[in-house]
Amino acid sequence: MKLNSLVLLSVMFFSCTSHPSTKEKNPNPIHSSTSIKIDTTYLRTGFYYLAAGSDGIGKKCEGDDQVYSLAKIPFVSVDNVSQCNIKMEKIENKVYPNLCLQFDKKGTTDLKEGTGNPLHPQIAVVIAGKLIYVVENRPESNITTGNVCIIIMGSGIGVSGLELEAMKRAVDNKR
Figure 1 (cartoon, one colour):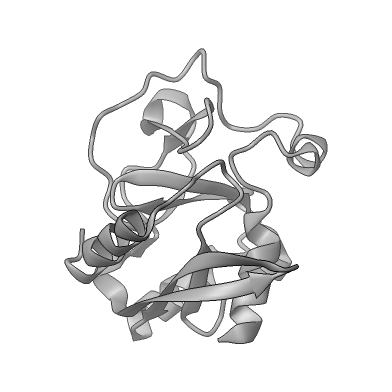
Figure 2 (cartoon, one colour):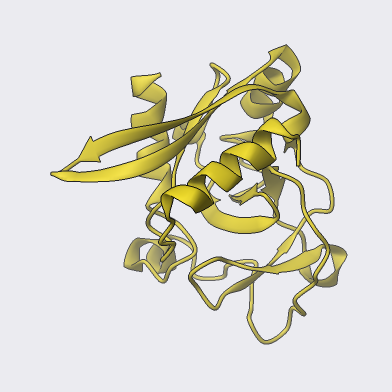
């Protein structure tokens, strides 16, 4: 589990914020705060591919002004989460909350097929209807074990203990 957490950590730093590395590696991202209309449709917890313009659901990233067009159905769904835990992880003398998800067999297969997929250069992480991250989906980010720890940081999100517990409850309740 520790290895997956570190792998995801390196992926999560390429989040919705205007991180210089994101701009350099993706000069033509599939998002625009001017051309995509924000949609109030509730998206269930899961991992989503980005969609072209009006083909998807426009969501504003938490802690950011960027709006992304997300596929209407996740490629990995909360329905396939078998266990959810909150874990605190110390990184460079700071402690960060993690929402750790363990997927069942189908979820593990879906993660393996969807992460690291070159046909989808970016993927979105949605928790309880909120777009938490849009990350680069590089080959080295392929998740094969079915265990993922989502670090709740890096995208301007400041969560309290109550908000973190609410995220966990949403996953436990398959929302």
